[in-house]
Amino acid sequence: MNTFLYQPPWGLRNGLVMTLYAALRTSQRWQVLTLEPEPQYNEKVLRGADRVPLFAKIAIPDHPKGTIVGTYGITGNLDNQWFLSILGRKAVAQGYAVVLFDWRAHGKTAELSPTLTSDGLYEGKDFVHLAAEAKAIGCPAPFWFTGYSLGGQLALWAMKAAQTLPAWGSELAIDPTEIGGGAVICPSLDSNRSLPYLEKDQIGKYVEQAITKQLKILAWQSYQYHPEAFDRTAIERVHSIRSFDHELVIGRLGFASVEEYYDASSALPLLPHLSKPTLILYAADDPLFEPSIVSDLEAIAAQNQSINLVLTQHGGHVGYLSSTACQRQVADCDPWWAWNRILEWITAQSR
Image (cartoon, rainbow, N blue to C red; front, side):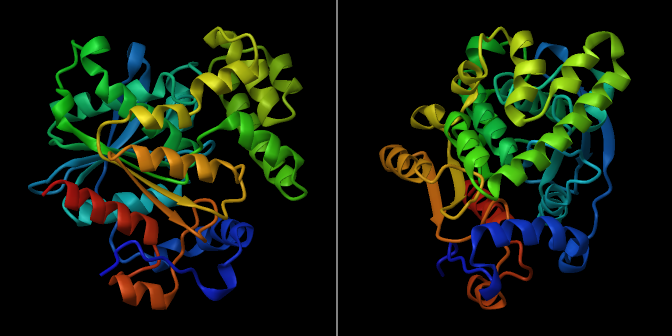
């Protein structure tokens, strides 16, 4: 069986249509399409890099065979990220412990700390810290890191952090061999190319503005929790993704420009150096990313045997809804093609 065969429903063969359908329609009915029940989660405040508090939900089934640590994309929180909730349900049902967390400046983590995002520069180490803390409360190795969209970029940075653990995290009670690898869906790879593409595209500019609106909501929430740590006039000046990073992020991280920050945090340059098993699901028709990235991604994957790149013609941005014919061909019981492939892959790597 070709486990990576993918076909969308006939009406969703356009990347933008798939993306919008998943975000606007499927988000309202995902529970009807998901057979697995909601796990019994325990809520914990764990510590990330530099002891930044991170809010997490943890579920541990009987006799777990490993642990999956995951988060979501550029905006949202654990209460509304339905796509991540699907992973939690399916992973626990298949015998994995899961650690799902609000990353920096998101959800309940934003209530706990005024620390802002760094698009992977510190979040990568957060993943490893979370694995170590989860291990201490009963989550077993191997640990697998996952995310989608910008969360996929964070998970790729986590892979780099895992490989260099002896150099920076010798105090952590976890060994690099206990981190199995990572699997990501439609990861952000090169912001300095994709953001201008989105800003100039006739429809993409509206998507960019919708994301900006959500980023301002996150910023105002952080201001509400920690007014002493934020300049409200800077938040008021935010009018784009780029200006959000200019006004609120780069100064705290020590970058002179947004472009310099994006160069430093983009995940594409990391890929040639990853040595742990890494699965990347990427759609050629993703409307949020610059199309030329696809050829670069293919070239890098061809030279690195640790990377399993699954490049599909269709899928949109974190859509990947499968047709009923596709579900029959790959023996899926639901349309969540991407999570099904990731869980299959993790299971195969663990044998």
